Image (cartoon, rainbow, N blue to C red):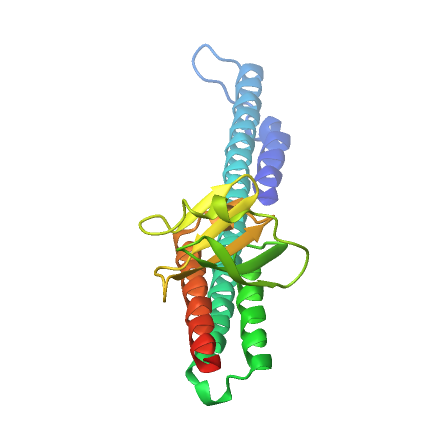
Length: 229
């Protein structure tokens, strides 16, 4: 680019020598020199404007390319995060399913371990601080068993009655109440989750997983109750 300006500068310097002794109709030598220098100056100016415009367009394109690259990297990171989250949830569900499949190894301590795994899974799925399992006899509305991993579960059984049948999930203030899909021997399991992430709790996939966890807990409770008898 700079060599163009150099050529124009040299031509402007040489104009007096080039126009020496020349005239054009009514234009004298001096006027020809002035017009030539003016045209060379205008040529340099327009070339400068053109190059500046090109540079501005390139800078704009570079900024847009950087933004696209940033968005692509962000989307890729979110995709990897989502895949990792799904894999982690699937691993938790597989651990629970495998624990229930090996019934010969279902001892009292193993039962408690699976309950705790279910509670840990529910906390992880909706990023909750606390959860509990409550098994309620639907005939007399009495608690048959309750499993806590921390804190206390102050929800009354009367508040659980609206959840079940066609409605398996209910949100009440900062509490999610998740019911097992069915009853077994008149008993229904309620998964009660407190202080959860609103966005995670609104996911349909996460809600289905919570229903699955509540149902698996009820299956375990029913099996262990029958073994005791």
